[in-house]
Image 1 (tube, helix red, strand yellow):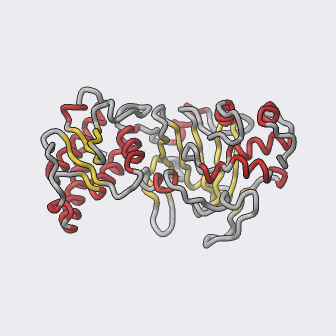
Image 2: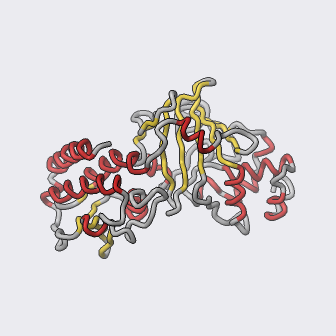
Image 3: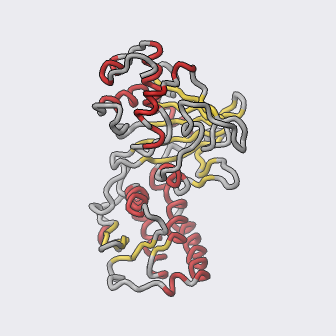
Length: 333
């Protein structure tokens, strides 16, 4: 999105702030000449700002403090002015952030009403995702078995049946980092998750997550024709990327059908909620020890390591070396 379009959005956001009376009543920083205070209505502001602004640092993300973008003074975060970061950021990032700085000078601070529309309007342009899914397939070689692990389910995260793909090698790299089943499941940078949302046998939406080197995950999506889109279907409102994604992935709420696993989930407002797997993959002790969905160690909401190990235990597959490593003798353990 161009800087002109963003500035138009900023004007609307500033008008909303003015209607609330927030900007004029906010305390004025002693350092308005070199930084602009950021006010987020979130207890997780450190992580949110690290994700949002880390994406401006470079193609693989980065530390916005080291890049000169952000500074924390006591309990308040500040966006520093362009003199601090103009030489260290890519051109696309500088162009977008200059628009935010102009809006911040007018409002004397950065509120959620200003920041969230800015992130929504600038995120795709700065992150540079492939504009068509075919371009992504050209790079990744597609996602098919046997090299990719597949899980299909229907639950409360999306109203449609979803098939999620992740490379088997990516799960194994995460398992390699663990000494026991009680350890966190942490994926390597570059790990890609692909979620295909289905209506019958048609893919109507594809959502993606890729891990950056700064530890955060990027989010993006394609529609049924494979075109890049900035939101996914959700009731009662579509989920805008990335600001609606963080609400679930950074939170601690559990979702069905993973919440009830290894038991069966009850139907919800949109009907059936289920994970479509062989019954022998419902390994009680394994699931309860890993607690993968509840712990979401890497802000991943699924059961990928759990089900990968359950598959190995039930079939004695090529990944059976992990059964010995973790002392898993059968699917019940």
